[in-house]
Image 1 (cartoon, helix red, strand yellow):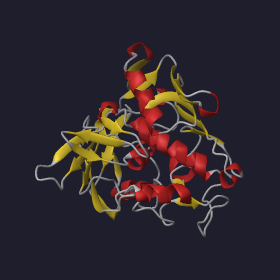
Image 2: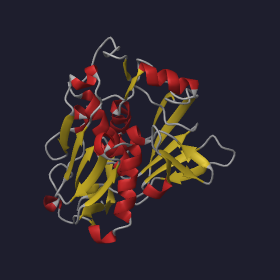
Image 3: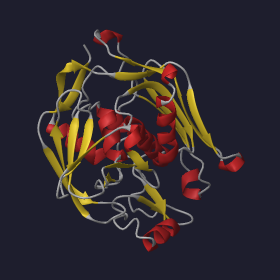
Length: 307
């Protein structure tokens, strides 16, 4: 049986929120089978649990925000991406502020935290959402067109194309394909950082956003070049971060997908719209488990290797 997974022990991290600039501590705790991933706002007078699911997403401007009973958690996608990449099904995330810490701007720190806590299997079958018919969402026309699509596939593969018309971005790979059966998330995707442009950062800060952002947790560009002294971590880091974000956004579904995801200029909003379109079309998917691990797609059966 392909089993569900959680953490072996508790682990913690302290950082700042990318947009709020607030100090925040997160504590990652093991959870029972079929719990899913649950954010817990422990700083509130009465702590509030926010289970991760597509309907709990209430804002997708700049990041994915989850809400319940008036409590919110912003910027969940990098931690969710790490959970998707390592196959974590059940987890409590205690958080002391409204925004997940940005740490180094990628998912690598979350991967390190999860692996250092240890990942263990649980005595319950891992449940997948298998796509049986294509589902697609589109927005805009011409130069503003963007789309995202899920299609049947025995495994999990993501293909993303960006189109930024910026010298620093144009000089790198604009399209990437990541296949869970052939590639390694921690090595190939997790280290890709979020990115932004100085002119946008100045405007966001004037609106009380990006207060925790800087060269130590984002790729920052002026009109011509990357300003970070160390340059890029991958030749195609920009589009790989979009894959990282998409994996986090899609894992908000609450179960791993068996699907081929492809997208052009998609973002948090369109990714969530794709999940909601999927949920509204039950004829396009089915829930499956694998009693025989050998029948599961390659790349899902083994626990993620430690660093």
